[in-house]
Length: 312
Image 1 (cartoon, rainbow, N blue to C red):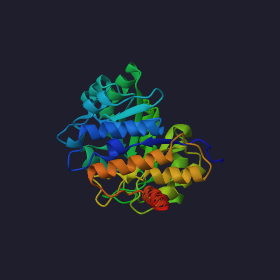
Image 2 (image 1 turned 30 degrees about the horizontal axis):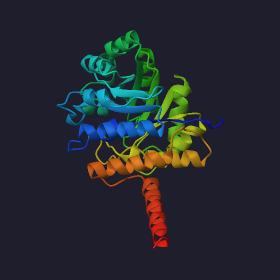
Image 3 (image 1 turned 30 degrees about the vertical axis):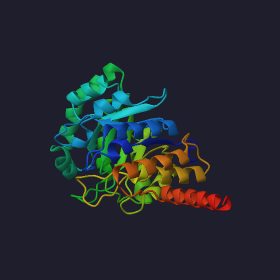
Image 4 (image 1 turned 180 degrees about the vertical axis):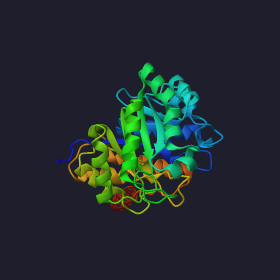
C-alpha cells in the first residue's frame, strides 16, 4: 500500500498531556498552550476534559479554557466526555468534537472505569445519540489495544470487537491506543489491518505511547498499511495513572521531524511546535521529553551565541 502523503496530527498535550500533573496548571497557561498550538497549524487539538473534578482535578477548569481560547476556523477543538453530564457541559462550552473512551482489555476497563467493556459501551449510547442529534463530531478511543498492564496480551479479536461496537455507536473516528507502549511494528500492522476491515481506514488513528521506545517505529508501520491520523503530545507530555510505568505519548516534535523528513505533509510548523514545547515544559517545571525539541533548541541557542560572539 502507498504511504499517505498527507498526515493528520491530533495534538493531545493540553488534555492527555496535562491531566495527570499533580501541581495545578493555571488556566492562563492552558489557554496559551492551545493558542500556540493553533497558531502552529494543527487541525485538531484535544483541549479539555469534562470529567468529574473528583477523578481528574487538573481538568476542572475545562469550561474556562474552552471559553478563553482563540479559535481558528477549520480547527477541531475536542474534549473528553464520559457521560451525559460531561457531554452537556462540552456542548455548552462549544466543543467541536466529543471523545468517548473504552478499552480492549476487560481488566483495564474494570480498573479504569469500573465496569465491563460491554457496560462501558452501553453507558456511551446516550452520549453518542445526543452527539449525532446535536451535529457534534464523535470520536471513540480504545485503550490497551496492543497490551494491558493487568492482563498482558490483548487478542486482536478483542480490539476488533470494540471497533465494531464503536462503529455501531456512530463514531466518526476511532483511535487505536497503545496505552502502555508495548506494541511493536509487526503487531501494530496486524491490529491495524484487522480493524480496517471493520472501519474505514481513513478514519482510524494511532495513539502510541513511547514507554519502550517503539512509538515512531509503530507510526511508520501504521503508515505502511495506510493509517494517516496519529496522536502526539507536545514535549512528550502525559502518561496514564492506571498503567504504572507508562511514559507519555510520543512527542509531537519527534513525529513531525520524521514525517517531514519523509517528505510527507502535515500543515504544521515544526519550529513553532518546538518553541511551544519549550514554553509548556518551563511553565510546568518538567523536563522536555522531545529529543528533536531539545536538539533544535540547543542548535538555535548555539547559533545565537556564535552570532553574538562575532558581533563583539
